[in-house]
Image 1 (cartoon, rainbow, N blue to C red):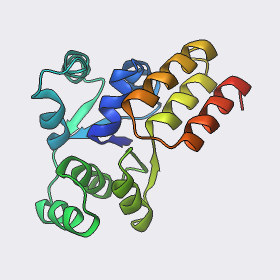
Image 2 (cartoon, rainbow, N blue to C red; image 1 turned 180 degrees about the vertical axis):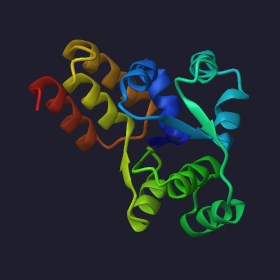
Image 3 (cartoon, rainbow, N blue to C red; image 1 turned 30 degrees about the vertical axis):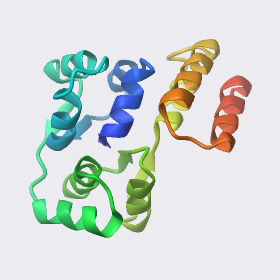
Image 4 (cartoon, rainbow, N blue to C red; image 1 turned 180 degrees about the horizontal axis):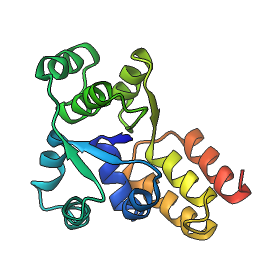
Length: 166
């Protein structure tokens, strides 16, 4: 199982690999209820895709049972509700990995010993698995550069990994 937070869910939708990722991930792809509410209530260009994947149960929504844990994560790590719900859901469901691009949520994962991944890492892995070709991956990486907040070093490393096939 992988738990996605809102930032990564939106980034993957914006670069048009969310569906490919969700359909090809070997385990269940889930989001907390708060992430669904955050990403589906606004009329953004990615909302119809996310709604469709939820309706088809390609991505499942699970409810976090411990609201106190969510509040504590928000306070302790200065993260928003969606990120806190994703981390809390991972703990609750014993999910081995959280997909987040939020710096403080990544810090929370590290402190709580939860593995994490990012939209860039998912893009690279999608290319490595030949689900998209290198030229398409480079275009999607360029979109991530526009939508995400990544350092130049991270972007250069990702480009080298995609183009070099490493």
